[in-house]
Image (spheres, helix red, strand yellow):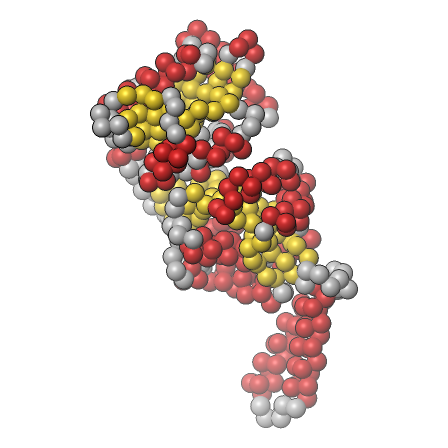
Length: 403
């Protein structure tokens, strides 16, 4: 085996996309997105010169010429091969010493266990995951632990991942289907759009930031993602034409009144059905009275920015105008992303991290799509400078807690 510090980006990406551990954060393009980090791609080849391990390495400059190294959702290799794991991490530590790194942080996308949301029996960890943990520890890695809180780690240890198939409507719970139908009745339309609509997307993301008190990303960052990933970047918006839908509802109500007037007294079932339709239409009309129904153009009420890499569509950022929460736009947007992801050859749509107890609002929302809740093995630290590691790791934890 040979350690290579100049792995070609094309070779790395091809290797990552073929791996079961494939992840967007290990794509070579991600290094271009993380402009405040230096980067390098390192790997291991076998005696035939074939790549058998690879990692996008991000290098963060620290005071006094020191650094910290992080390989997001990597390295990519066969963690069942103890010899390879030991060789790779020994060589990676030597590489890190040259970069004056205090420690290396890794969080490979090795699946610890998986279950459906709401599944009562928690499955046992996979034997492969337990072996991977043991091999990383034997190579000098210190396990950060089985964290259940997202804020404790760089990347979430729990994620809601949607397995994709041809007809996704078969997997959604009945109550989710009812809400989807309700969104359609309110005139919500979800579709993929081009980067020229990023301003509208950025605005709904800003609304989400204000509502939740969190900092996501700005327009420049979104433009950078869509530019760098090109056709693999997907922007979906949910819109409603308030003027057109309001007029449509008024026409529906007028027609229902005509039908009621023309219904003979002895047709009670038809009369009751029409009255139910009338109440439903009146309810929607009452809601629309709270909005500006004079604008001709559609109003953007929600959006999702995703990137496809390998067989997974990573749903990175989402936003919604809370004034339209009764329109349930996300219930149409998520299925649209799944549909387009499947059409593009993806097998999974990763909806992102959730809290380990699955009690937070985000987890409960994502449960509407019947995802797999995947638990990963978590983060590891590989100390490089043994004298300064303990202090630097304490400072890192303190800074993360304060943020």
